[in-house]
Image 1 (cartoon, helix red, strand yellow):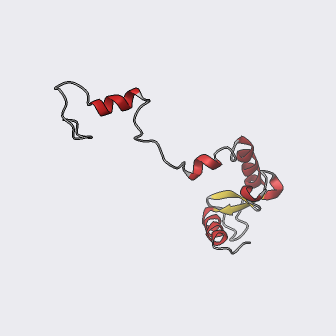
Image 2 (cartoon, rainbow, N blue to C red):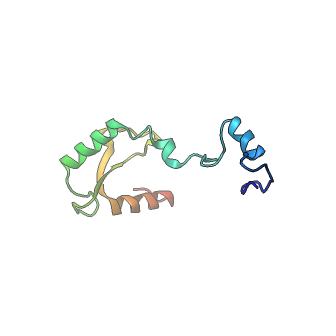
Image 3 (tube, rainbow, N blue to C red):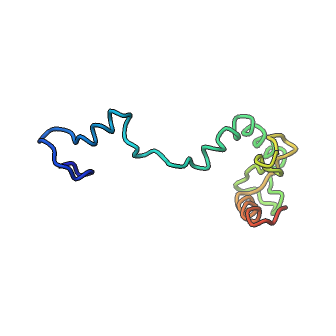
Amino acid sequence: MCPRHKVLHPLGAQCALCYARSEAGGSSRGKRKHPSKNTRTAGRYDYQWQKVRAEAIRLQPYCSFCGTSNDLTGDHILPLKEGGSNTLDNVRVLCRQCNTRRENDYRKGRRY
């Protein structure tokens, strides 16, 4: 008996439904119906972004909002989805906590 389809099949043989699915190009298990957010933005944060972010942190080794020097990240002033770019003049240095807070405020409509 196939545990997946609850269909009887001969001993040692593969379920006809499982076999038909594997012949048609594999099962749909593990494939996402909707791609994750990261797959849509993966091409935007390339090697150029990594270089610009590292350079911004090197020039300003502290958070622009709270002044801490722990767990720094690069943040786009004008987001890429709104026409911003991966240039040094569009990047500011924020700690991870301030960057997360800024993102949450941005989603609620408060922009700074």
